[in-house]
Amino acid sequence: MNWRPGPTSIALTVVGAMLLGWWTVLREYAHQPTWALVLFALALACWVARTVLARTAWSRTCTVLATAAVVLGAVAGPATQGNSLVPAAVCLLVLVGDPELPLKLGVAVGLAAMGLIALGALIDPLPAAALATMLGVAVIAVLAGFSRRQGRQAQQREALLAEREVAIREEAIRVALARDLHDVLAHTLGGLVVQLDAAEALLEAGQAEAAEERVRGARSLAASGLGEARRAVAALRAPADAVEPWPPERFEVAVDDLLEAHRSLGGTVELTRSGAPVTLRGEQANALQRALQEALSNARRHAPGAPVTAALAWHDDRVLLTVRNSLPGTRPAGVTGGGYGLIGMRERFETLPGGGSVAVQDADGWFTVRAEAGLR
Image (cartoon, rainbow, N blue to C red; front, side, top):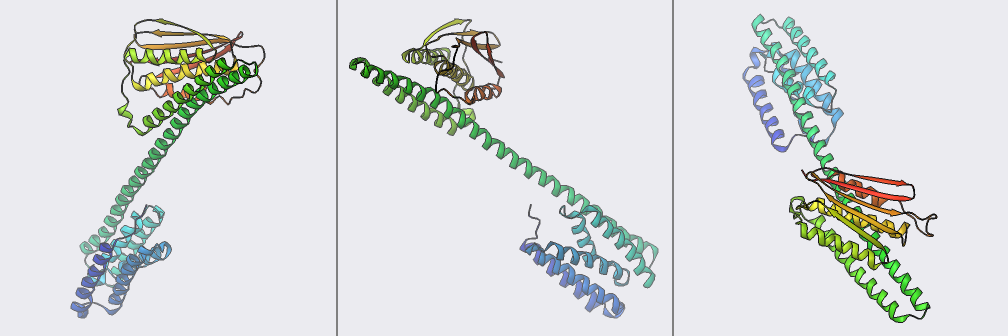
């Protein structure tokens, strides 16, 4: 983070140094030793130079100037009636309070300042109470710097957390976009390939009317996929709390549309329903719909022509979707898959408001997908 002084801070430092120098050097010149006034003037110069140069990020030079201001001001403190401790205390606070500098450096300079104050008191003796007050100034400067360091470190942690939250949100948006793109492409483009392959085969067999019907089906599927893509983009652009709930009727229609689309692509599927349907949150309905869509798409790709059985069971606290299809003895030629659909399915259910899970089983010649969404 940027801890550099602003123009106001620089102006206040310059004005304060000028006033302090005028009062000490000009008004009380006759009452103070020359060596102390020289050291005091140098401490003021180091203080002002450090503040000005801090705007240019000369960190090492600024650290040296601040340390010099503390040393010079501490030695001259007793002889200048404590006036030179002002630049020393300010620079000591800066050294301790800067989280980019080692804490042990500020503490060491603070201890050195107290020793130099005591040394200055030996050169120019003063009452014990005055000496104790000057030592207390150094202690207070160290404590104030430590408090300032903790505050700035807390700001750094908050800024880091904010950056991580932004990164997490961006990652979530990217993953959601990837999931929706996969679902739309796998369902729509996969269906188009099936329809166009069938149309090509029918044309080769001289069945033009049947081929034309397949082409019309492909066009309808493409239009449906375009609509899904637009809805996915609209959902990503909308606020999270703007997702509308799905009444049972709407969800049942969406499920029936997916089943009909699967049948139109040459697949066979039977769905059994049990329990009393309830209104779903938008995220829950979307996750269940996409799970059924992905399971049917996988069945068409990996087990073309194999019958599919699906079950939708409504319970008081959850809804369970189960999709099963038999697997062929050999994998269809040209079929590849990176498993992104199943990964996206799991991600959807794991982030549902009421919780959820996806289990996949491939055993005894059957492929089973079980998706569960919590309703509470």
